[in-house]
Amino acid sequence: MSKDQAINMLIKQTSLALGYTSDPSRENDDMWGYRAVKDGTSLFFRHKPNTKQIQITGNVDRSNEVYISNGNRDELTLAINVSTSKCYQQVVKDVERRLIPSIKSYKTIVDAKLAVTDEYKKNVEDNIALADSIIGSSKGFRADTDTTSFTSDTFYGSIQMSSDTCQITLRSLPISVMEEVLKVLAKHKDSK
Image (cartoon, rainbow, N blue to C red; front, side, top):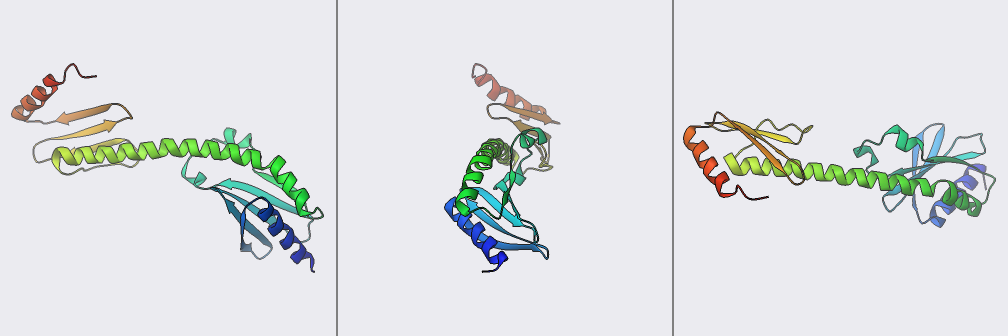
């Protein structure tokens, strides 16, 4: 068995023993690696030829969709080096002790950020739906804000929603329409 075949086997045995599914992918001519995936996380095994080290890098799916401050990330060990002279059981123990706890912590951070991001996206969708229900169309929506602006033939405005409140701004409203809005608000003045 060649050295490369032995390293390849070590990587496959390690990823399978950890419960990961291994998928080979070539990065470039002088490096090769394996990406192994499990439960929304991944490990990337990389060996540089002519060295006796394998770098194992952990990541979390969808982590590129949220901002994680360097301070939070720097506190975590998301890459380790292991010797190619170790057996896969020793590498598994190294990964479980040195890398997996940080990947789990990182996944917790990413999942929390994704929940906030998903709530934000829902608020944006709700804003658009509310604007559509008021005047039949929304215009001027910007993805970087939670405010939806809209126009109609007679007035324009904006809607800004959070998880439990809504702020509506209406401009150039005809007096007759404003009277109707005030009547509706008067009916709900004691609502909380």
